[in-house]
Image (cartoon, rainbow, N blue to C red; front, side, top):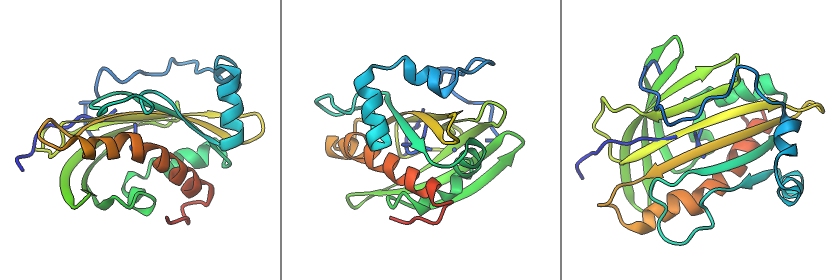
Length: 222
């Protein structure tokens, strides 16, 4: 299959997910203001029933996951409660090449470029006997505890669109609130069932796995 350009906003996720020596971070990815709100302020702005679900389940996936039809490029957002303090969560999530440890659909990640602000990873993905190769550029913002990623368009990628971000907030009890957004489009030539798997079916499970991986200091394996 001819490789096409890919753009990822996150990440799920995924993945991302989750993670650049590149200046090509998508302008569409929202940036946090210099004075980021507290975790408590973010939660206070959410509906009470959603906060209750997050506190009970530790992972809450929102956005378009519940929509009908293939989710091509739709933004999926998620909240994750990590048991680790914010600095440890950030250091783990910033190690993008370690995503294979909790994302079994990624068969290989190789860092092909490293810069002062992040790295570019070549990722190999296997879904329902189909294989895809693409490169993701990550940009790290350690002061804001934020990670952004998107397609490295210098490479001929197998997917059409991928981008994402993680934004982390310290909680008063020592835990960390993570907010993630991700967008994936496998392209019009790929069966809708693959798009559905990457988004609706895979993102919630990826969020659970990344939480267990971080909470275990990178020891957990699915």
